[in-house]
Amino acid sequence: MALLEIKELKVGFKTQAGLVHAVDEIDLSLFQGEIVGLAGESGSGKSTLGYSIMRILPRNALVQGSINFDGTELLTLTQSKLEEIRGKRIAMVFQGSMNSLNPLMRVEEQVAEPMILHQQANEKQAVVEARNLLELVGVDKEKGRHYPHELSGGLKQRVAIAMALSTHPALLIADEPTTALDVMTQAQIMRLLGRIRDEFKITILMISHDLALLSETCDRLILMYAGKIAEIGSRDQIVGNPRHPYTQGLLGSIPSVRNIGRASSSIPGDPPDPLNPPAGCRFKPRCSFAKDVCSTFEKGPLYVEDGHYAACVLVGG
Ligand SMILES: Nc1ncnc2c1ncn2[C@@H]1O[C@H](COP(=O)(O)OP(=O)(O)OP(=O)(O)O)[C@@H](O)[C@H]1O
Ligand code: SF4
Ligand SMILES: [Mg+2]
Image (cartoon, rainbow, N blue to C red; front, side, top):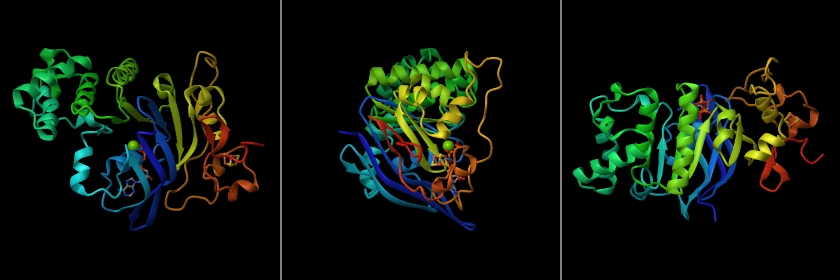
């Protein structure tokens, strides 16, 4: 059984200019112990999907569909029941969270805080556990006494991850956990998340615009385009046999040993206006394979092979 099951999720944002179609008809399951990478360009709806699971969308959001976590429907859950899950069984490392640490608190106190708040832990005991957790994520115990400004970006991100892990969640959502870090530190953080999955046996949804980075660590990959799932499959299926032209374009733009010396291609054009997305396949204006029928293609991802689906008319013929 899936740990998290999302069905027909739609999220729109009411604005003065109209309704922003941020997430549209998403179906998705996450299973226990897997790391799933969610990739897509800026504005494709990745964070909105994460916030929907956490139920922390802003007031102007309109949400439809179902998000079932371990047998509990989250979207209709009362606030008090939600508090038993959010920040405890489901935790999130927020986009830019390493820059949102409290500058006036020692980092070990910040890691201890969720244990005190959510688990009524004794303060002394929580700090001891926080030090252990910090060590586990690669922050030396004595650095726990430091304030955020005394730590490098990589160490601050490790602190943010330790904070999210402090209540032993079953599901961790990591939104752009490596943005603003140098390439070496990015790889270290990705390896750390892999190790955390192995040690804690938790499920991780890793959000990033960097498909190359995700494909190094994740078991499965999801490609989002303009609020919809373009393609989903195991890492080998997506990297070895991409079937959606968007995935093919993204993979083609990744520099690799094979294409050194050649300019890597990028996808021409921009994503559609989320206030007024095109009918049918939303990728059509940028797709070099587009044909008339694509303007009426409204289906979700189609079967390619076991576990592998792509939302494109080219699939299956
Ligand atoms: N509160 C809001 N009100 C109106 N529109 C919003 C709001 N929050 C997000 N959006 C819009 O919803 C769409 C999806 O945004 P989201 O932040 O989920 O994208 P993302 O894939 O996480 O992008 P990024 O890679 O830049 O973080 C975008 O068009 C964005 O402008
Ligand atoms: S449905 Fe058509 S426009 Fe969309 S990705 Fe496939 S070929 Fe391109
Ligand atoms: Mg985002």
